Image 1: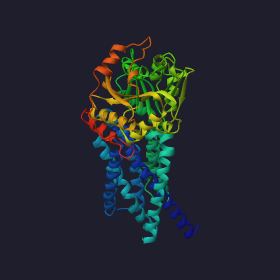
Image 2 (image 1 turned 90 degrees about the horizontal axis):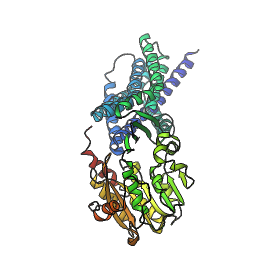
Image 3 (image 1 turned 120 degrees about the vertical axis):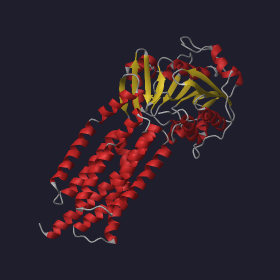
Length: 509
């Protein structure tokens, strides 16, 4: 091979390494921010810190590169191997820190800083590597490397949300990107006379990351087994969330992204109350819309009422609704509600669903969605969302929504009530709460248009907790206190900040 052909091959290998390194660098930032938002809940804070700390680390790494001695290509390869090991294991370390210690923010900061320093070393070391291969440092060379870095950022921003996260999940995705860094190292090492120990180190790192990639699900479950107090009987990471079922004796629990959704010991208090408040406040409710409630428990309660002709359950995650249909643990508690001929299951985003349907379709809309802990959920607690629901209701229809804890998150509870009032100004708002031992005092907001019909209907047979006297007591005689507040909107999602501020005083982990 001629010297010119060899130079071209070396240059192509180095430019390919630059592109691959750029893709991995941005994906690590996205992984860190996503992991922190999943585990801690505040996505704005999580991504802001992930980006800021990583960029600060990149600055430190860029300055430190001037002091690095030795063969630039070998040092670059070692840096990539270290980045692969640190970045690849970042999700595992963060997950373990969150589940097993109270040091998760410190671990998150340390991981972000370390990854940032290693990323910051990449471009200066690449420039030095090109110089060692006989290419003079120039504005043209630097501009090409930076262009590849920016082009790689675009690739990463598309690959991460569209392919990596939905197909592999965070932990396996991190290990795949770590393996990508080791691949970059090996591409460079094969172009130089690298020491054998470095080559062996690269091979060992690649094998380790491959093994961890294969065993990622087992590792995650092992940590979860210590996080959850009861034995895990079902575990799945879907495109939208992590679903976990635990069982101990008569207590079966559902967790979504680590947050308890119900305990079979007391879920009747929640589901009988939210359904009874609405179903007894409409004359002859026939068509019911349930937003959320993919576990089938709310549908179970609605189907008890005579005259119900059609129930539409809208849940974004098809795996959750399929699980409710097929899993024996869930079927035993939801009475096979999602298999009832009167029930239609729609796997869609609740906001989009309410925006795209004809007005006046439903007598009752029951909103059983998860708490507004991040900006992704904020739209489901906005004026615009409740306005869309109002349009779907028949003239005498009612809406009831879960509204977070009236005790643990009183300001968020008040804001939900104020937001419902702003979105449905022609309806009367009734905030109330019920004690659910697994959660404490839990709040709801009922919106009605016909005062005479409020709680006028009869409760069905077979209820385990609720009664007409108790329902009247909690809704009319002792409504939950609220404080007027500014409503939450799409452009100003106040509910997320308020909810997280309320919750922060109770978080001791």
